[in-house]
Length: 236
Length: 157
View 1 (cartoon, chains in turn green, blue):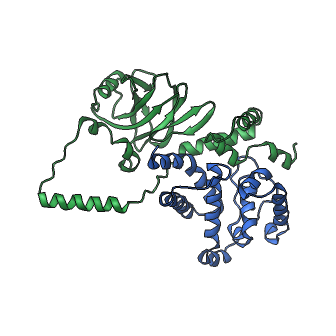
View 2 (cartoon, one colour; view 1 turned 90 degrees about the vertical axis):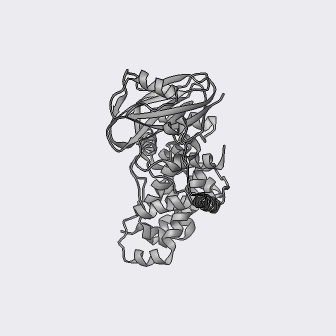
View 3 (spheres, each protein chain N blue to C red; view 1 turned 180 degrees about the vertical axis):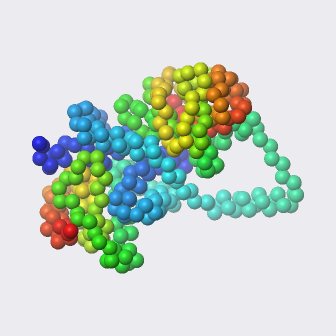
């Protein structure tokens, strides 16, 4: 058995695992770590535990309300009282998704949502709204929902072409209640660059994915479905 | 990328480790979650941080300092005195296990030793990694660990 101190010097600490997943190691350090992971079951298990920890993580970030935001809200409320009538108008896009910039803070608690992990050159990192990705990167999507439903994930890429990312079958796939559940298939990104919108369509029945794709392509919400969305930016 | 987007990215990348480590140090789910939120709220107020060893290392240090300070405040200390602590591990723990050091032990250790104890036992860092975080030599880390093993509290239980 390898002495404890020697093992500590070659095995991956928790810090090293997190740095690896966050893509912070230089090429040499990453290569060394990868080589070790290939032959050390203990470290591979530890890294996988970190990946799963991130996948299961579901604690929302507390966002402070800014003084400026409060002041603006008060002015708007006062103006509404003076006018006496408030007219709310929603665009077709608004019916499908919340604006990306507010998505993380304005999601209704308990509403279904999607997330993703990015695998770039063997390094896996959690994705965030506006994440910069590259052709060839693999995306692993997650789904969070508090009741059974059927899910399809559709993308509108930089060339405005709609694609189905999930599932591989003809109909929306069942998804069980749970937080940040990693879906059982990855998507490898193609060479089309630019801003890409990804829609998680949670439905009360197994709609045909072609029907879902067609609805999303024309900015409509499929009947009986709730839609969550996020954006990625594909660059070289 | 905007500050908002950067914060979101940092939260996704760093928050799981911040919470895991806060749980290990504080042994209290509510306090750990509070530490997580406080650390990120502080970033909103002052969106800049020194990166010694990289962003992840910075969050490791920030979490350690925050939690050790929590343990040291008078209110906690009074409560800790009445608690029974578990023994500090004296050898490398089994792989994949979550290791916790008794919080009363951490609260009583000198700051520098408590910090080293967390990095060494909880995070299983190498001497080099600890040296980078503390901004000191590898030799000094070895000396601190030797002192840690001499502490009566390190052998408690």
